[in-house]
Image 1 (spheres, rainbow, N blue to C red):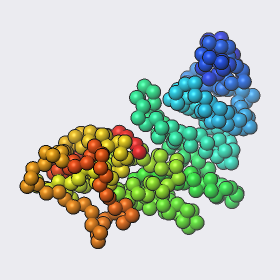
Image 2: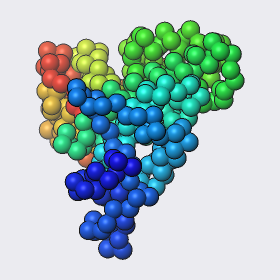
Image 3: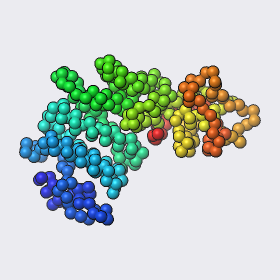
Length: 349
């Protein structure tokens, strides 16, 4: 209450804590029912809150539900604006979790919805400007929440307490995909009990294939993942594409032969709407593009598909489509030309 009174007096009430108006403008009075305690960083000279100033577990759960059902759907402001408000209020809730040292069950009920929101936001806002969204801060908080959640499940196992196995499988899978390529995450996954490993076989396979460098299989597996896990896995998509282009620069290296650019876009999972981005990425990595009408008559094209031996799945066989901007274009791969020193291009599926 003191927090709300002080912010009202100092005119620090957030837009989403004001009474909604028909016109959608923010010029309205504060709404006590919508005001949520903001995060306050611990600092020297600040007194610790009294026990009666801390919210109860029931209040914390109601606050999380309010933020992730009502505020997140309020489209009067862009998603990045909503994210900033919800992120701050969830951070204050997690701060009180630590102060009260809540048990595993109460912690899981609060952290699991929070980490889903943070993971989804990391995907949705990944292309926003740094002034609107800081991916490093979001990633740090997702990691902290996920690790805390997994520790809670480990504690419940030690205490021999029951819980919904499907919830743990979802969190273990999200941890694996958010840390795609991490040996620490893979080691945790392979050391889980057998029934969990069976439920996480796709996630474990994807992580292992990433470590093996089989990036095309990683892309194929990502398409079969649950929506949220697929979303966070695609945050690695730019690096996967970069690695595949680097491999192609060695596998198809030739001063004479070229590779159809449309096939490259198919393998690297560039949907047709992103084909202009493929052209930009090839130029960014210093790959030589050759137009269909500009290719010398004595220059051949590498045959990239065969009915007898495809290194990708048979059902994924590539067929040229007319009317696309990549039609007739090819790319010449030369390892000496590929600029591997450049940072990864940003982008998602």
